[in-house]
Image (tube, rainbow, N blue to C red; front, side, top):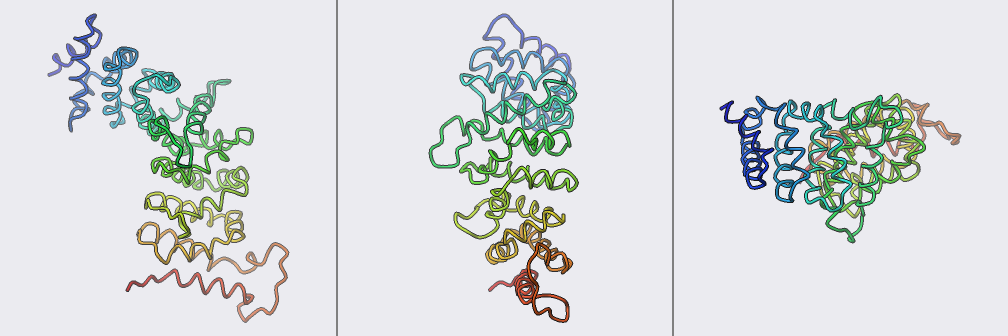
Length: 348
């Protein structure tokens, strides 16, 4: 089989277009099979360069090569090899070309290769001095430019619906969080409205991005709260508040609920959530919530609110009157009583 695969790769660079097209169709068929990526791993070093070249061929060649690359990129070993072969730069070139016939495939490919650390670091251009963050800025331009939140959206927005998935991938690393939350970029302010996008893939990506940022309590959470401004917490709380328009996708609700849980675990995040009325909003959203992962995160957040030191809850200059035996005001007791209802969920 090894010799046949080597011969097949050679046909990808044949001078006759018909031969190249037939060869890339065979490669795509193998790549799409269950064990195909493993078989093609034997020739991975020779396979990727001609596939990348075919992206510049006829529309049919480009579309088939794009499909083959996406199928191969489901395996980490192929992703690593693609990164070494320059796939990130080539994908960025094709994404910027509005006439390229398979931008959807390029968005999916970029999402897949940034799942591996080398792909994320190459996309962020870490250590490339003046170029660092350029690809991220270009990608943000595509996301924002084709990320309308209302009903007026076009085919480009659909074609690039997988592109925001790059953001939660790169936010797993400090360099990605730093570039995305840089004070001069204002990227976050443009991304927050995407939680209301009609394209579910976009909502999932932004929700997961926020969760990944919140995992970094030391730097990520403070930067997120600073750069997010007044619109951040209302936007994060809305999908799990039960308010209309209701968030129908459980994956979005779970990612947001877990992000809020992480925020509540930090002092600054806790205080801002409390001020934003998070306890009441979570209580209202919990009543009709059926997702087990969402409920678990909301219950954990409720526990944090309930057990938080009463001295911290009284900060901010508010006048505390008539403390009970536990040192809590009547208002604090009322809120905690409401939160306690979230710890046991009953069904009829």
